[in-house]
Image (tube, rainbow, N blue to C red; front, side):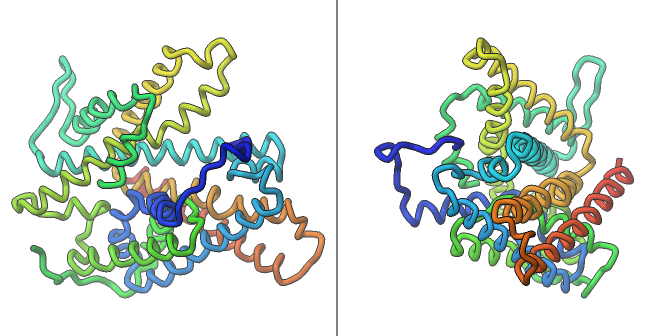
Length: 368
């Protein structure tokens, strides 16, 4: 929200609802890829996960301090970046956030397509003379299923749906795999694409992610796939129930994910088109079609999540809050432990971003 509410318009949110919102913001589709991340980096990579988890916790505190400096002027992440770097900062922050959401939406389509293909591996789609293979055909069908949700004005009902959404422990794995560390870094980073405002929300998610990673790794070991659901045996009824339950999530979450992008684009339209229903539908349809195409181009779920984590989430959730804090509080004017600590964190974050981005692009090109 870019403008503060009047005093009589403010609404209080209960502690429980705030915790649930924080958990829902942090716990996304990344939870399906953490077993693969652990498999890639080895068991010792959980130490790296803890270090990565500490970074967004730290930057969340920096964001809180920035907002406390001027609560009326800084009520959102965009406001903080705008306060630090004026209009250019707002534009850059908005661009990165929209790109991050765009990649998440693409990941939702890939998730839907891969799991539907898991249930019906022999299905393909014929469009005239064009024969679309199973995985890509399900991505297209997922886009068709999502289409009606893109026409909704009130997405409140989708928020409720999106909140829902017999194998032995015999997998063996490696203690440490240096070659897989860049992938593990990127996927672990993808888990923290949002900031939790409460310690309890952050703590619950930070416990949930490694628990899921360890369970998936113990069960499937080095054979775990980029989405742990793809390892489930479809012959079992319980496995099918799990997959179908997960499939409901992307259908509901997609519209919620792309809506901020559509709104940002609509706000840039000329005044006579801002309230035009046709223009709004055209924008949403364009976003849907383009993400379907991108989901068909990306070779795997892991490729889009690792690239998003290494480049976009590192920039938005890790690096930019530090830069804004230094600018707003003018920390650079007084050399001390605080400045040195933040600079060291920024250097490490840049290293993780560069290494992860290079590795993600290289693996994606190799898989295409």
